[in-house]
Image (cartoon, rainbow, N blue to C red; front, side):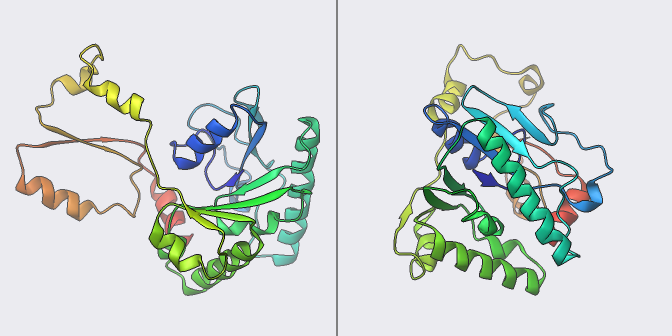
Length: 256
C-alpha cells in the first residue's frame, strides 16, 4: 500500500481498509519519503513510532517510511530519479525480508504511479478518495498531478472511487472502476450512545447539545461556515476532535 500518510497519523479510510486487509494478508503500509529539507530535522510521529524504516504494527502489518538518506528532491530531477530507484530497491529488500512475493500494489495517490512495474506485482489497484488537483494552487503542479493520474488510470487493473462523481470523470480512462463509498466503524461510534460509556471529564462541563467534528484542522476546512453556523445557534456547542496542523504543515498543504 502506497499512501501519503503515515500509519501513526490521524486515521483515514486508508488506515481502516488496509488494517482489514492485514487480517488475512501480509501488508506493508508504505508512506511517502521525507523531503530533502527535512533530512536534518528531528521528526516525530504522532504515536511514537519510528519516523523512518520499518515498524511492526501486527504480525501481518508493517509500516514503512523510506530512510532519511533517500529523501525526495524535486529540485534536482536526475538525483530524484536515482533516489527513487534506490527507494524501490530498499522496499524490495523489506519485501524479501517479510517473504512477500507477487504483491498487489494498492495505490492511494497519483504521485506513486512510478511504483507500478517495479515489484513484479500481480495486480495494481488505484483507490481514489478525493479530487486531488483541487487542493493545488500552482497550475504546473495541477497539470503534473493530472498527467500522473491519467497514467495510473491506464495502468491500473482495477480502480475504486469514493463517489460516483469521482468515478464518472475517470471512467473513460479505465472502465473497470467501482464506487466504494466511505463508511464508519459503526459499532465504535454507536457506543457513544451507550449509557455505560463514560463521558470524558473535559466534556462534562460543556453544555449540550454538542455537535462533534472529527477531522484534521487544515487550510481546507471551511472555518467561516462553522463560525456562521454557531453564530446563528449559540445554544449549540462545537467539540472539535483531531490534529491541528502547524503553520509549516499548512504551507506544505498549499504547495502540494
